[in-house]
Image 1 (cartoon, protein in one colour):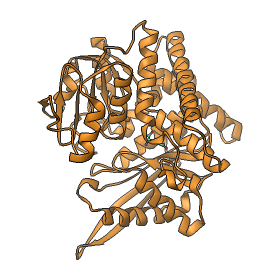
Image 2 (cartoon, rainbow, N blue to C red; image 1 turned 45 degrees about the vertical axis):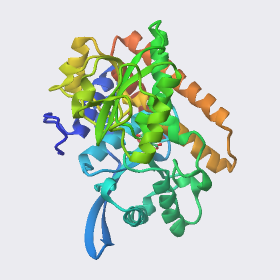
Image 3 (cartoon, rainbow, N blue to C red; image 1 turned 180 degrees about the vertical axis):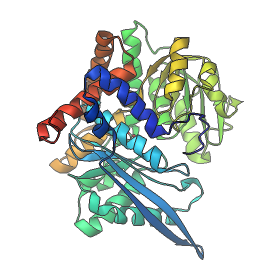
Length: 420
Ligand code: GLU
């Protein structure tokens, strides 16, 4: 297990399985079926040698295909020093339930390479990407497994991934999503996860008779998810009062100027030192008083040990698995509501689906269509979750997992390989 600050004796994968067990009972999925649905279908580990600067290094990469009952495996590839098998298993499982919850025709997978892209040159990143995707290419394909960006990867890396696959199998843009526009990427994909976070938060506010206007927002992480979430919150009239990244944190109670901050990050590489802001140290970002706290970086940052210090009314999970089950119990006792990752950050994979559809149709949609369809899918899914939670008197998290489990269970039965 990685040392991620959590004192939990369970691994991330075991924590996800604990949540699935609870949901399985609510959804009435038989126990022996649960045992099958929890475990990944296929796990691949590859060695990635890198010869650079006169030195031979080697890295380890994984691709975990969790479940494909509802369609091709789908999920990102992460480059981060903490990547390990149990974490990738957890993330792969979460993708199965995420795609089922928003009802797009995919299963779930995740990949990762244990490396630190922040200290690597472009040449090194290219070499690692090329080797990794070549070595897993036999299990990929537009109708088999479709990777996408995740933490530490981006559109450029997906372009290299598509090319690595294409050299072996021929040109196939639908084999990866989140690509550059020049290679068949979709408009609106880059901002989709952050935008989805705000679509869901705004629906949540509406259901409570509130509005995002003037709401105080704090965001941990200012990468792809955090920065676009900030931009969309600001567009809705919310005040983003504090954000951070690996190099530092900043705060301004009047609200940070997000477009200017994004420009600042493009030139300096970090939010640290931005004009008219006070510094916020490390984890302190999580304890700032606010209406919405959006963890949009690593997993397992709110745990049994520190959840008591959270002073937000609602936690919106931009990251995958940022709140441990123990942390969630503490938040529940304090009356802090949690909008779970499965729905809160599902905008990214939803627009990935649109990208895949456009690639297959060889026809590009207009931005307006992407935006309308994204709103429709997310709002419909969220309403289903809220209604289910009300009906079954369970948490939003349990509702997400229970709805997703029933869909995957029904699809598995329809295929004939689960007969109970
Ligand atoms: N990595 C993103 C996620 O965790 C997107 C996955 C995808 O687009 O396939 O949802």
